[in-house]
Length: 609
Image (cartoon, rainbow, N blue to C red; front, top):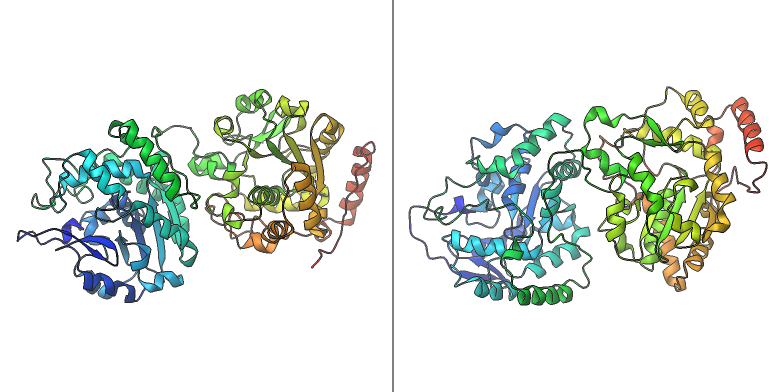
């Protein structure tokens, strides 16, 4: 935006309103801004949206580098703001109309002033949010630095204006609430400044996936490296150092000031913080977004970015992704996702009475149970699943870093695990918390697991079905022996608050299973709420819910060309894979292994319509 100013004349910069949104005279024109709604949007257009001081020029740099596949020279011939300009500045329409695709643009405009085409799922929108306390502090310093903004009397004065929305950009609360409320009307990606601080590479990969840009690991590394704050500080096309002192007073600061989280603590008084918290709670009561208020940026290390194993792999080197199972007390896990030291400590985790643990052998309905637990907790409200991936809301306990989140999370804590009974927290074996075990007929488990090994980049691709059949029967796979897993849980079921359900029951009569789970969890849902849980937990519904179906996970983690996480959701597909000899052999082993376990499975059923 700064480069769009006419540096040859002294301008009169004052705030004015366009449909209630505060803009700056001599930079913006009410007539031109009102016309933006009518701009024709192309499917290839990419719009970055931020409230001021929320990572705008950071996103500019990332978008330019993704488009250039990490080639820094793409940013050297033009200032970033010329390559990715604001749509609301005077004269923005002409360049927008004439520019070839893909057109990259930034804006601080509210949802109400966007081009209408974006609200019809044309183009793509990336919204970067930042915790508003740090936004306020950064914006305060920027007002002292930007000549086109009124210098505040002091921090207290600016605090009051910000809280009242009497600043350029108007109310932070109204800005983010409108975009969140209307997010489903757009091709929309929501990321946070704090995520970028903590794990920039993961954010870059999410943006690439959203934009359908297939970059190599090296290209992504280059995007990340050239988008780091230290790199941008030394890149005059990204750091705005070349902008005239008549626009930005470089003696008073820099555009890239700190790039940290929690600096608000050095500015807010306790009274201001308490007041802000009260306003935030009221303004955001219906908006389920959460912010990090104080974090320490991660250094380059083996520290992993998230608590569930799929996004964990994003941070690994390519050669680390293809891993073979290793054993912890005889149970096979995956290196770089699980740690023997951490898994062994799970036994000592302190369990609360309100904790809920879903237990499955792999490919037995794990993410189905995740969805059901989330929806029961939300009384059938699907929006509860839209702000976080299900694996973040109901994460695996055995992945690296799982303990810290478990300790800090408020009740009720919902968790999933593939671990055997022997490695569970001891408290569960003393009837603390509740355990829901989902079992699936092992022939279909074997087939689903076979396809998943071809689909999951982090698992060794089988030579063929025969090879995988032998490994599964020998327990030489992640999760070890299906037989030992289910037998141990059944044998020790009376030591726990334990509910046993089957995948096949869920296929046949999902509503009855949901009601059983509600009764077990002592959740008193109305018939309508149960209907909603059931409807949003059906396979067809989950296939179209990107927070439940894992479609947003990068192809470097899950090869979407080879399959889907939710593959069939049927019973009896094993018949299309097992030979007669394999089936007979399996039946013989099953009969011997399960002779003392009175459990029965459906091997072939037709789902109810």
